[in-house]
Image 1 (cartoon, rainbow, N blue to C red):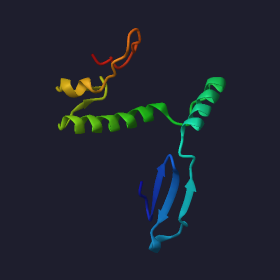
Image 2 (cartoon, one colour):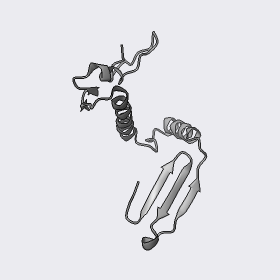
Image 3 (cartoon, helix red, strand yellow):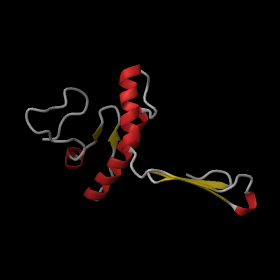
Length: 119
């Protein structure tokens, strides 16, 4: 992510702020992470179950962000541009690409609502 005079790099390994020399009103910083985000996500989930509070990360935003990433992968795999219907959560007029959106579940498991399972 880039902003005015600085860039932030954020991933599971930590974060880093890099400032432009001529605009260095904020010092460059670097913080190492654990490299494994799962323990903190599990702790947050368990705390939310106990307290009924919302999780740290917004699930709806996470869903939309991951959808964009998945659609990029599907477009790459199919080699085609796609039109995405966000209301129906399906690829428009491309059954091959749309089939890659769902997940085939092993019997007897199924997704009871929302997105249908892939065939």
